[in-house]
Image (cartoon, rainbow, N blue to C red; front, top):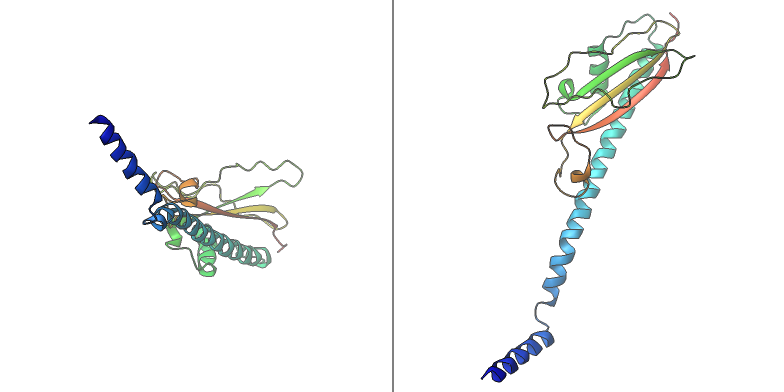
Length: 182
């Protein structure tokens, strides 16, 4: 009796092994999730690149206005609003964009903190610090940090990005310039 059941099991396994039904399903189950992860990562990287490009361009145009605007005393909110006008993809610009501007000594080593002071919406918001207006012929450093939610936070590239306490990603743009004389 035992031999007979082993024979039937072996025959059933041979039939299953020779069968061609369902071959495509196995390939589909293996390949489609990988293709979806690659597609999601490509979309995420494209959107991050577009955000970075718009922020860089808006910061460069605003720094040009600051540099050439002789006699104007630029304040934090004015600079932030100018950057927001020129950058299309910053949603909630007044809350998602943080600036820091400091005066640098051209004859000393640059000592800017490596980690920027970005907005972390999970923590209580800090007041505007590290924002010093420069006088004429002073070397200035301006850094903008935009915080945003990734499109696919748990898939592919979105899962590997460095996030703050609220799951937001930071994009940075910086510029060093000398203010024109008045």
